[in-house]
Image (tube, rainbow, N blue to C red):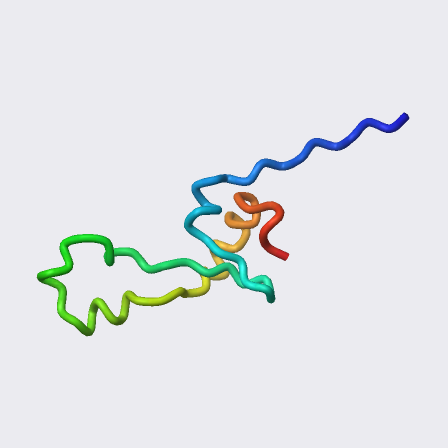
Length: 71
């Protein structure tokens, strides 16, 4: 009888902040768009809108946090 391997746990904080696309890209939101928006100009707020792919430097850390998310 063979022993089962341990399951890896997903970091729930990372799972709530990051989304993995169908092609395996990990997307994130930009910071500074939650509060204190009245003094930021419109172009700056527009620039912070939308989802962005994580950097190549962060990819290894994210794969450890989301073991079943990224390909």
